[in-house]
Length: 244
Figure 1 (spheres, helix red, strand yellow):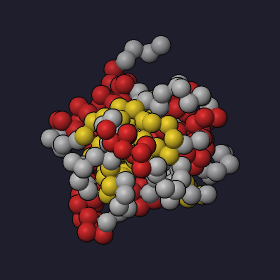
Figure 2 (figure 1 turned 135 degrees about the vertical axis):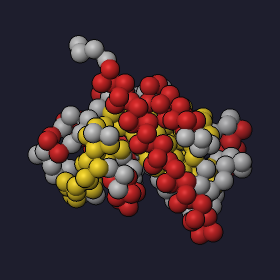
Figure 3 (figure 1 turned 30 degrees about the vertical axis):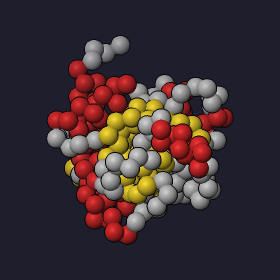
Figure 4 (figure 1 turned 90 degrees about the vertical axis):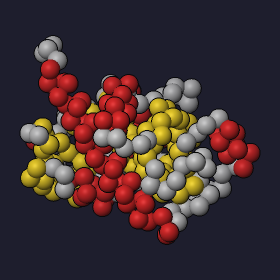
């Protein structure tokens, strides 16, 4: 049994969704067939069920890189190797509205946890198969998404240097959040697959505006639909691969 995620390998699927928010984990689990709560320990809420007969798990990680790193390391010990972060983010670009969805092609590494695994020059990038599955699934479901570079840090209330923020905006950075850099770097280091999708909950200056709650919840449900369908696509493709 793992130290922080109090469950055993039999409780964990190969395919895992890793939202930060516990309530979002519950919402994802509601899409499973026969979901069951298998652990609620140290900020990790874990449900396992199935989609189209494929075992799947969702584990909430809480906020920030350290929680993500510990969570996916322990999930990896129990056999998980394919992760999709289903998260929220702020937006750098004015054309991104609350509730819009973003699929990152790479992440600016502004957090510290991933540095303990690989140096800052190593890119925080999603697995290409996961990235492609998310984009193709969104297109198939006819749900609009923004695709491009994101930013992830580890100090939510620390002021962002205005000059640096302006450079990021000019360079086309789309999103700002706190977990995907760690997810991508640790997954690359361990030989796992990871991708991510975010629903925007405000701008980088305006945090979670109350007037945007309804739009954000619509986006959240859409990102869940995309993530589950994309993970199913990945699992079905895996099943068709010849055994090594």
